[in-house]
Length: 150
Image 1 (cartoon, rainbow, N blue to C red):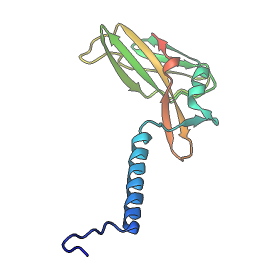
Image 2 (image 1 turned 45 degrees about the vertical axis):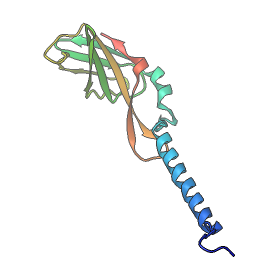
Image 3 (image 1 turned 30 degrees about the vertical axis):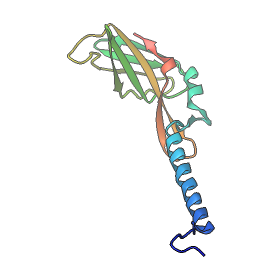
Image 4 (image 1 turned 60 degrees about the vertical axis):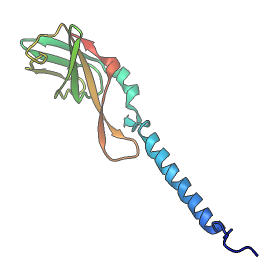
């Protein structure tokens, strides 16, 4: 028998518990990291809201210092995102325009960029409200492919 050298290692039970804890911590970290890549799915009328963007039918016109929007479709528009361009700069403004299906709304809005600069080009994007799948909250979705240039 040798004296002075203790050759005992970790017990198999302690090693197993440490391995299980390591796997749980790593899986939790991977889940939280991957969760940022998966967005919530927003639905309207039981369909993904992205599919309804093709059904949005509206017109927008600059009229008398304001904006007139006519909703010719059968989907309510909750608000408008208006993107303004001047040279290489652009700004997006959110305007509260609730336009129900088949209605028209005229509001006085100032369509200028920071510093009262008049934009060269204006694009109006409709935003729809849908419910979050598997949840009880509502979320807005801007239909970027349904934009209209003024």
